[in-house]
Length: 340
Image (cartoon, rainbow, N blue to C red; front, side, top):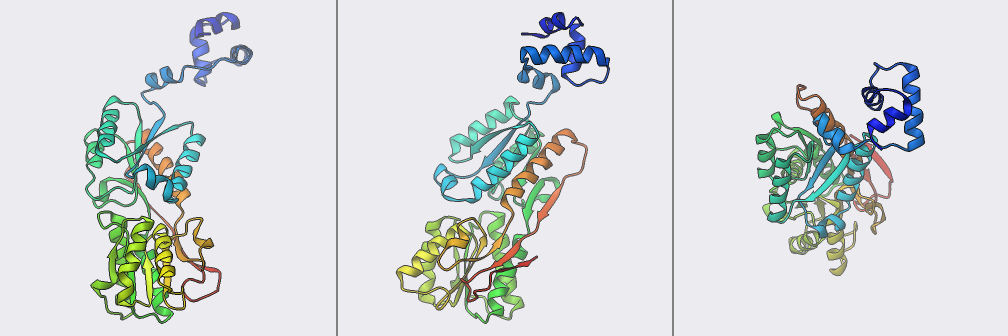
């Protein structure tokens, strides 16, 4: 079934059928009704690929996550982000192409696809500092949005939360409860999020009049195993509280403390960052900084589509609010939220 056949059945010209399909106002009501009846009766579906090429857009968005398959399925952050991206794309009649940007051969494939014009734009999540993929997108003038504030942010669209302020709030909460030797297990420090949450930790210590000790800082990599190793490394130094900069790492921290016979919060208080679905079901439930992951994905899609459709508009920097969700891992049984 093609436009010529539809036109013949409806008794109109091919150009009239084309205008109806593309919702052009330059069609009489009578002709539009006749074409719509034929389209319904024949269950006609336009060739989306051909329409996309004609319009100069494919309505396909690339989502790049710099992670291995094992991390994608072990870290609940990414499924929530993908959920937000997919829902927003569905509501805007766009499709999503997902890449896990590790190892290097996958990055080479991404670059090939960028040059082939298959996608309209790209969302990059959790990129490392100075990621060459960002340079490639800028060189090709391909619209893109980063989930996570980049270092050179002035010319780049990004969606993020205030990681610095969220971490500072979490650590100051521990300080207000009277904890003096507050350690941290950081996110990977080759990422902006890792550096921002570490900066928030340091600022909270300074504002609380507490001494920073390099021995109380352990660099993790977002994984449960790094949380486990970090806790094992910190225990001999005897901190009385630990700020763990991502909730997946807190799972490893809990396991290490349990193996060592350390009670939470009686011996060591724990505060995390993310408030992923499992956080409330740890034993004891985790005090943590909540970030709106699904909403981050949705806003990233809306920002990218706006950049695609209106390239003349200035770049957008969106920071979404966080909340400190207080549970019992830091010494309180109060289940309330302190809003930012």
